[in-house]
Amino acid sequence: MFQRLPFKRYCIFLLILTMAASGFRKQPSQLYLTTSGKISFRSDAPLEVIRASSTDLIGLIDITKGNFSFKIQVHSFQGFNSPLQKEHFNENYMESDKYPEASFKGKIIEDVDLSVDGAYQVRTKGILTIHNVPQERIIQSDVTVKKNIITVHSAFTVLLSDHNIPIPMVVNQKLANEIKVEVNATLEPR
Image 1 (tube, rainbow, N blue to C red):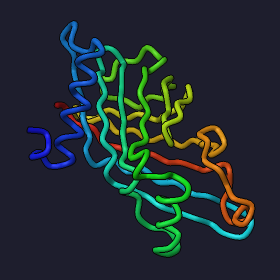
Image 2: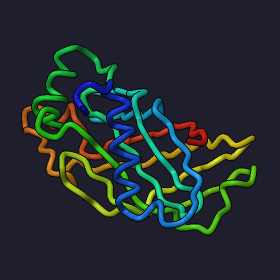
Image 3: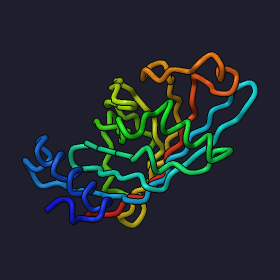
Image 4: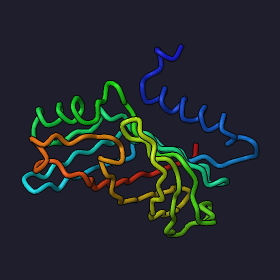
């Protein structure tokens, strides 16, 4: 049954199923969904700047409980300085066949009512999993609610060493350990 679903629908189905199984449906909730959020990263190393992005970020927020879950398929990143660089990213560093997803799941710390139009700065606390290595993180986000649409913008850094992503000596001047990440997503009621 699952193999016949298009990949994005399969991911959305799994995301909703996971959230429901973890207690999201115990009381009425208001779910907001994105299937085309943008995530980009930048590595500023002494000898090279590497940029890539994806518009395949899938995310779900339960505004009643403040829970959220976002996922990205690592293979979906585009950009890079060359096709070879993208190949090295997927095969040597991220090992995308072995660890196909990166995710961030958790809860909004602040007590905000995201059903009310306005601009909010919120902190989110959750588990950021990259390269199959989970790390607890607190990440700040700017959230705007307007006419029942939620827009999220977040900028943070990720240390490759925190997620067991090695930087070989031969490229240590071309790949930074600290990666700048930016997320932009528009979520609509589900």
